[in-house]
Image 1 (cartoon, rainbow, N blue to C red):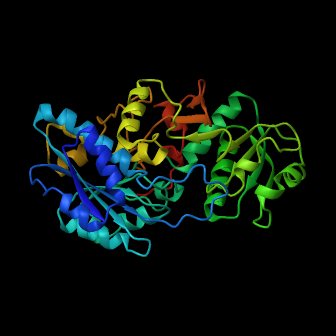
Image 2: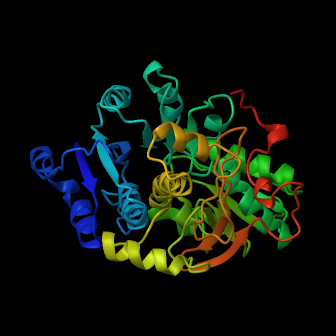
Image 3: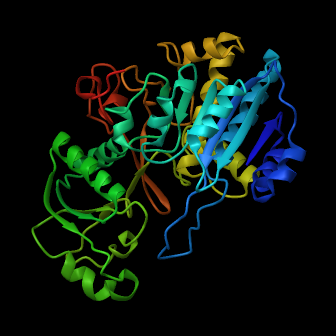
Length: 400
């Protein structure tokens, strides 16, 4: 599925976001021809088959990620009008059984040099290594895999999505401030749960906490029916201050809260959650972004939306600062030392030179409340406190 977005008003954004459910033929009829003088940005994602959910309360929206990129396009064009700059976004959705690599090759062949990747796992790293991607600047807005910032990093791949290490560090700093330093870790059986658990254990070592016990929640349990009886027994064990859950897909984590043997807070993928964006975040002008997004997409902004928004806005910021529409000039500025993005988090955001990760605060939030923002006061760094979150330069495994 492919279509272009151009000079949109907020009403057009809403219509275009809703148009994701339209047929490819209808979308192609609505698409505007590419403007050769425009700054062209591509957005590449793939349909995924979601596993059965324990609850249908939070069904993933079809336009998650794309809605954020679309709003950022409007922001870019709003500023660009004064500088006679025009931005276009071409969105491509690969089917479940499709090939993202082929889609990226086609975008490169069509002249795209700036591409936002909203893809899971290690896929962004594999795409960055394609010969056709050598002259592209890719933004990873979908994958939190630490490996993409370490062994699988690439010089042409930047990350606006935080990795698991950043998220776990943001949570660990808050727990350290609260002096909740003894953790019971409950891990799901999926590979991504184990990756999240690894990030949690790394964060514990960095910030003086201890995982006193680790347990695996097997798929033999039906949390919906047996949580009240099984969860108290399951959470018995060594003394702990907090229960950390590693359940990224939501198989059981929501059923841990209020059912533990001891009265303990729950954090991690459920309960008190570290994230790059949250619907309750209103500081530093973010209420304005929240309201504009809701008016355009008819829903609240989600973490993938924010990561895609930041990627498209990074291009717009570079165009504003350089006064250029050339992809090579924009790429050099974005990756350079002078780049800074105002992104409603209280501090300018920039990309780390060693692994391409966007430095950014981590929000620590409950369902209906923003609890705190990391880095926490007192965690110091010789360059920027933002580098206390995630893989700092001395510990990076990236060799770009």
